[in-house]
Length: 472
Figure (spheres, one colour):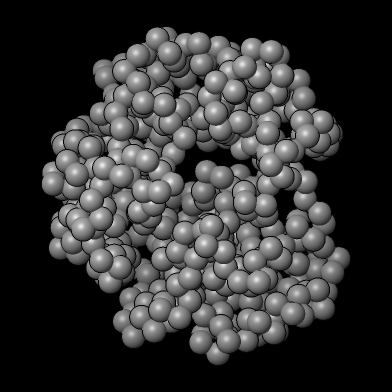
């Protein structure tokens, strides 16, 4: 067994991290990433728009704050590893018609959800949001400001995904002026051979220049995305990439596992399978990466994410108020999610709903003055209870029975008698501990948190489905 301890701050009560090869082999099956519960595979494929309208009305009555997500699908370049819903084009004139439709959709949604509710969180994802020319960015944000109650000052968390190759002299100043205060940079790997193999040539100096400018402007909680498992990566080459990234000193890091599924994602057919690292090499890369980032002072937030101890994610986790949604980990658990654009997924306290994946079909719906919702699910009380439990485990790495009882007016041991019985092997393997008051994810269980959460997943009771990626 190899182990490594997280540098702990005085207020941190999170356990250290332990890597155990035998346990990883035993529990590294496939499973959901739990950006939602129920997961997207449980969505009704013919979800009635009327049910979304009713969910929005219930949300409006709650007067909870809002989070606003926009999916911007355009990319000027095709990255061969990508599994996102995207449109590859060099034609920047496609951006404005898309944004005009997004604003038509936003007007419909604002009326349903309530235009006066404070928008505390806003995110542009993609695709490549920085594909949008300056005037189109300004048009989109001005439209949102007219339709929604956008926040400013210390009350807002507005973030955008950035491709450093799509940044000119106006990009970052424009985003800053529009109210964005947090960015995430796609890096993936700084090694030129790896970059060439995935068709993403992005010199280290380019990334550093964007990072430097962002800091000078005042952006905080800057995140860098890395991917391990790409062609030509080795433990040694990825260690070099990691050193370069640690020198850049981002506030957060996302280190994702590449899933090679060329049958499902056509761009991946350009990647030769024999150039990929072996499963054992991938595990070695991950193990070394976690150890090195902990050594460098980052905290392991969970599920591929790391943050400096003073970053808002780490602070929220220590305070027990970290949350997880379709954008990953977030500090805004109190927000309902209004999502706009092709394939975007919205969320209220008791429903999820997703727009059409097909761009022409989404456009046709919006042009006809209709919402483009095609999938969704209404949550039962049991769904909401299980979502709360899974959220506690995957975000805080602990579950307090007293807190559960106060929140749901249920006895945890009675409600989850079957699940507690099925947790016993994991307790014997020291993945999770139970002192009668608190379920605590142990150091060896943090990496395998998806396996622990699956115990509480009603839809996975028959075992993990191959529709999901491997846990590690």
